[in-house]
Image 1 (tube, rainbow, N blue to C red):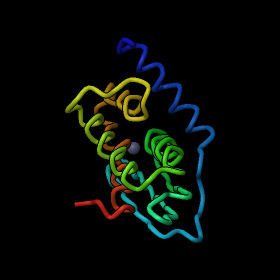
Image 2: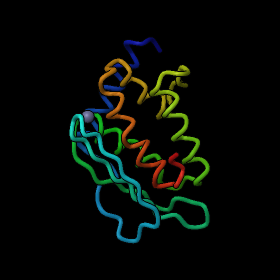
Image 3: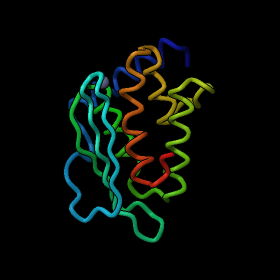
Amino acid sequence: MNAAGLDDLYREAILDHGRNPRCMGKLDDATHTGCDANRLCGDAVTIRLRIADGCIEEARFEGEGCAISQASASMLTEALGGKRVEDAERLAAMMRVALEGREPPAANTLAGLLAGVRAFPERVACALLSVHALERALGAAP
Ligand code: ZN
């Protein structure tokens, strides 16, 4: 897929998740919580996970801010349900590498899709917000 195609796909996904956020809301029996905020544009994302036996049984997010931060949180949270913790850690690492542009992302992956945000460099921090929140929730934050 060429760069223009990827950007279109990214824009579509952002609009879709922005209009219909998945996995949004409270998770009262969460076992793991992580949040992050970006003072620059007022974005905030909290990710809550219910983890049992090394598996993410349910993931939800709450947040406010720009469309990119909220849609990214929606896409990420949707991808987490049913994943093993180590797979979620791998996903967060892949997304960080893709968003920071250190390696070209694999097409047809969440990381590849979200890497479309690199067409808008000032918004990369917005997309990374939910990755930070997830890493904190998993206890993997530095
Ligand atoms: Zn933002």
